[in-house]
Length: 160
Image (cartoon, rainbow, N blue to C red; front, side, top):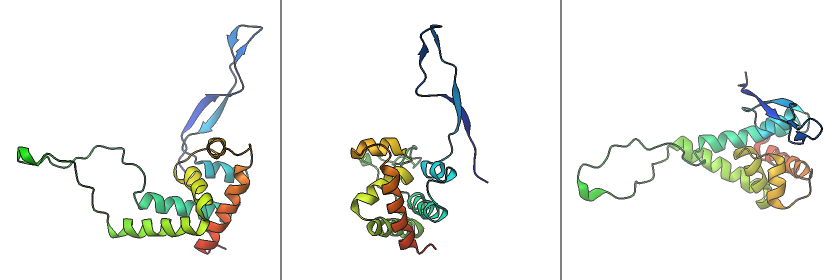
């Protein structure tokens, strides 16, 4: 079962009601745990095959440890005072190396421009509106390009 983390958010077009001089009270309930790809799937904007391909890519991204490190390192401090250098990068496990290779192969199969969009939406969790702005595309063109990229990804993963 998918995790649900519901929150109330004001609608972006709402502002101050000029007649009442008060802030608008309309809001919408959103699931903060839902990914942009899951949002598209729940509205039938991507099919099951495309969604499964995107989830495989995101799984390889997470298993490979390709995201930024956001926690503190808890390694023991060196015993002597002279050995205070930059910490060494942790050695990747065999599973991480395999996941990184699968991710790189899938990104290469999608193509250079499409891999960038796949990374932004699936791995980084960026919304379609933000991705379209970053690429300088007109509104509502990103979903079409994302569907093409997801189809290539599904072909790479041999998903029927």
